[in-house]
Length: 151
Image 1: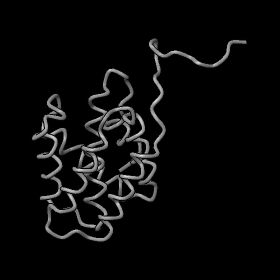
Image 2: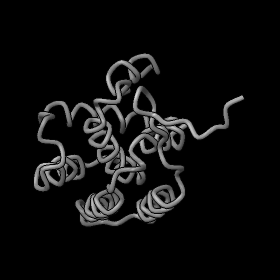
Image 3: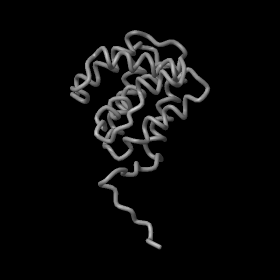
Image 4: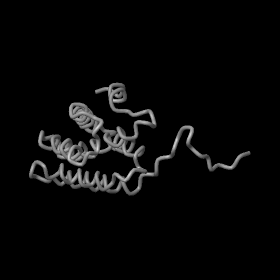
């Protein structure tokens, strides 16, 4: 998959789409764990959608769109720059209270196929670390307030 295709279908560029950015962050958390053992099971993919639906976290996005996001992100996470993809996806929503959902979702995906692989455990640890250390998103646009001194 080319970067252009990925950007056209997943990248969120408007601040008003913060809810969709949150949905993408949830999906990437599940996809990261699902691909960690090098085999994505349909039950893992289904668990991501079920988790999001059961908690009402993305009511504005249909199941087909979520499934498409998952498939595209899972494929993208198999590339050498997967860590950048995860970081770039999580950074815009770092101010949102998603970390508990991200962690619970990642743990449920790891257990979904009834075989928690050591690489899935590592993926969960990576997500936990990222949710703790990612810099908070900076507000952009007309509502942003600059704290830099004026010259």
